[in-house]
Image 1 (tube, rainbow, N blue to C red):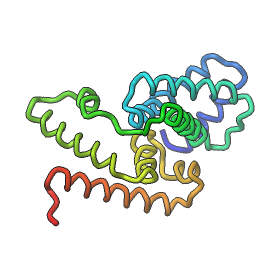
Image 2 (cartoon, rainbow, N blue to C red):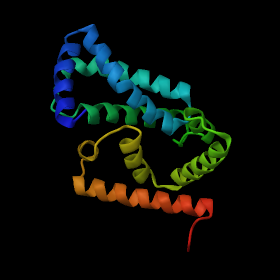
Image 3 (cartoon, rainbow, N blue to C red):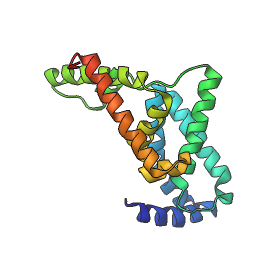
Image 4 (tube, rainbow, N blue to C red):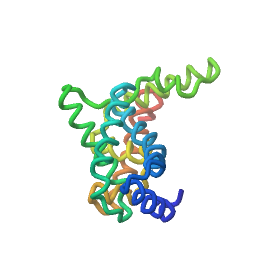
Length: 189
């Protein structure tokens, strides 16, 4: 859904949901919960914890929605709540966010045995590389590729210029690619 259409959808549906319209609330949850869950699942590697935090995020949204004024920043708002809940939970459990297990990623897209082995190796390299990225690089990659946020939305959420976000994402992807090559033994250097 293009950003302008998304903003209009958010404005209309959120206004109805804030007034107690159950169908509108269901639309909000149906649209946003898979994206929030995917982001949290990739950071916790724990389905139950990701579900629990996702529910907590939507409980917060439900409580605060009546006071929320839509100005095209709902996605940034909901992801900020999710990030804060994740950080609180990690702190509470004294855990560190990590990417998904290779087994979980392999279960998502099963393929033929030979392809599975190659994919498993690539996924393992990806996991290892993601573990080595600084948290700031990891956050941009997760928000973009797990959360489905546009670069503009990430820039708004992180209060940084769009050019900075684009450059940081570009550098993070290159770091990730180099780390994966080294892990898989494809590094020409």
